[in-house]
Image 1 (cartoon, rainbow, N blue to C red):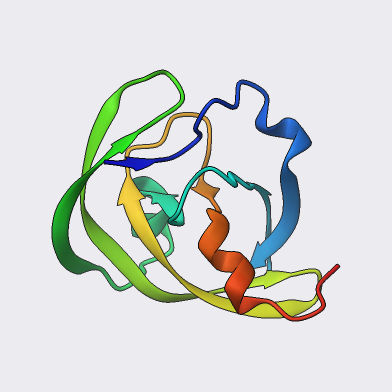
Image 2: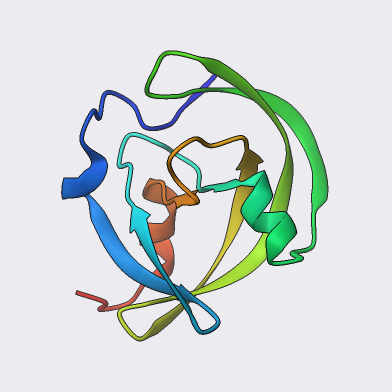
Length: 112
């Protein structure tokens, strides 16, 4: 099981502004999560490519266990004027469009 939103009741303190194309988004960062996640609705709205993935379980902040079996590969975000390309696993997220896990840190250079 992969933790996401692990133990954070107030993700407002862990957020960054980013862009999907020209659309500004506020992105919570969950350092307790090993993966990046995106709402299935957002992926559909943005018409992102989806791939099947080996199903795994994700525990979210309310202790609910969600099953994840799809991902959007190589999604381009702009964070602090820096392009970041990352895979996002699709979930039914309530309250968030996307959540960055700790793995995105390995892809950035001198953003902060």
